[in-house]
Image 1 (tube, helix red, strand yellow):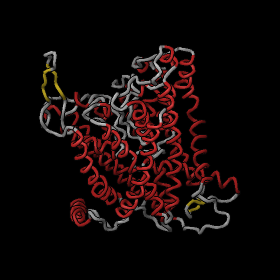
Image 2: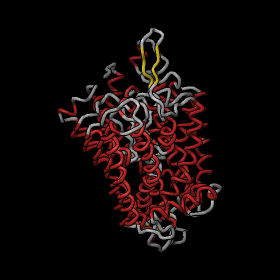
Image 3: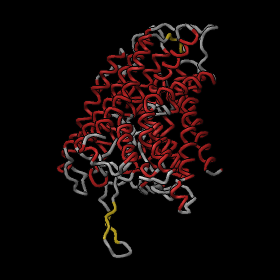
Image 4: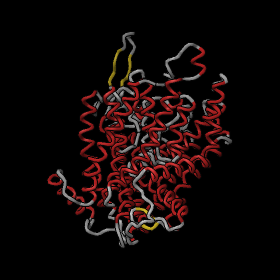
Length: 567
C-alpha cells in the first residue's frame, strides 16, 4: 500500500461526491418536469414520443399500475434480444458471419440484459454480430438502466409526497431519464472514449500480419457506444470477452479512471435527488455517508490483501504484492479499486481477473454483492435497496425508544417492514439456494475449474453476481451449460423483479400517508448515530445470512493459504 495509491482512491471519492451534487440538482429538475438547459432541443422530441405512444404525460399512475407497466415493458425487451440472437445469422451487420446463438444461451442473455445484469456466458467478439450488440444489448443497456433509476425515483416520491395515491408515470419517467440523462452523457462519453483510442466502426474485423509472419484477426466494431452506457448504466456487459481488461475497451489509465467515475456517478447522485425531493439535502448526504463507509472499508481490505500478496509468493521472494491476473497498465491499486467499485455498484465490468485475487481480496466483491446492491449499487437499484435497509434500521430504532418509527416525516409501520424484509430475503433465497444445488449436482460441479474452497467460491460468486444483477464473473467456472444458463436466468429474474415489487408496494403505501412534523422524540436521521445504525444493521443482517457460506469459501481458503496450501 502506497501514498500514491491512497491518493488515487481519495481523489476518486472527492470527484464522485462533487459530481453527485451537480447531477443530483439536474436529475431532480428532470424528474420534477422542470425546464433544463436541454429542454429547448429535447422537449419537442419528448412530446413526439408521448404522441406516438399515446401517453398522457399529465396522468400519473398508482404504484401497482406503474409496476405492471414496467414488467410489460421488459417482456418486449426479452423478445427483442432473444429474437436477434436466434436470427442473427440471417440479419445484416454481421461481417464476421456469426451463427445463431443456442436457445439456452439466448434465453440466459435475454434475461441478463433486461435485468441490468449483463452476465455473459459467451465471448462477445466471437459470438454476436454488430446488429445484436447494438440493437439488442446496447439498446437494452439504456432501457434497463433507465428502469432502475425511475423505480428509485418512484420510491423517493413515496417518501416525499403526502396523501397521494400516485407515484408518477412510468412511461414519462423512463422517457425523460433516457432523453435528458443517459443519452446526453453517453454521447459526450462515447466521443471521449473514441479520443482515447476505442474503436467505433461498422467495418469488418481487421486482418493483420504479426512480426513472425502469422495472420491474425483483430476484432473491432461499435465498441465505444456500448462501453459508454455499460459503464454509466452499471450494466457491465463487454463487447469483448476480456471486458475492461481489453485494450480496445479500456485503452489508457485516463479511460480507466473516467470509467470508474461513470460507474458510481448516477447512483451517488440519486442520494442527492432523495435529499432534494424530501426537502432536506442532509438526508441524502447521510445515505451517501452510509454507502461511503462500506465502500472505503471494502477498498481498504481489498487493496491491503492484494498489496501484501500471499505467503506462497513471499516464500518465493516475490514481495511486490499479487499481480496475478492484473493488467500491468493499471497495477494493484487501480485493479483493486475497480473490483470494489464494479461490485459495489452492481456494474460487472472488470479490468482484472477476480479469480486470481487473494482469498480476502476476492471476498470483498462477494460481500459487496451479497449485501444487496446497496453500496451505490446499480443505477437506481442501489438507492431503493438502501432505502429498504433504512426502513429496517428505523424500525430497530423505534423498538429501542418504544415509539412508532418515523423517517423524513413518514410513519414506518408493519406493512413497510414486512415488505422490506420480503425484498431483502430474495437475495439469500437465490444465492444460497442455487449454490447449494450446484455444489452437489454432478453436471454443475464438472464445470468447476478448481477444487476445494476456491471452487466453492467460483459457484457462490456466480449466483451472487447473477442474483444481485451484477454480472461480473469470478472466473474458472464454465457457465455456458444448460444448468447454469437456466438457473442463472431464474436467479437474475427473481433477484431483479421480485425485489422491485415489494419496494414499489412500500412506495405506494408511503405516498398515501400524511407527513408528520418532527418532534422532540423523533430519531435524527442526518447524523453519525443514524449512519452508524444503518451500517450496523446492514453488516449484522449480511453477516448472519452469508458468513457460513463465506467461511466455506474465501475465509477457509485464506487460512489454508497461511499454511502454504493453495488451490
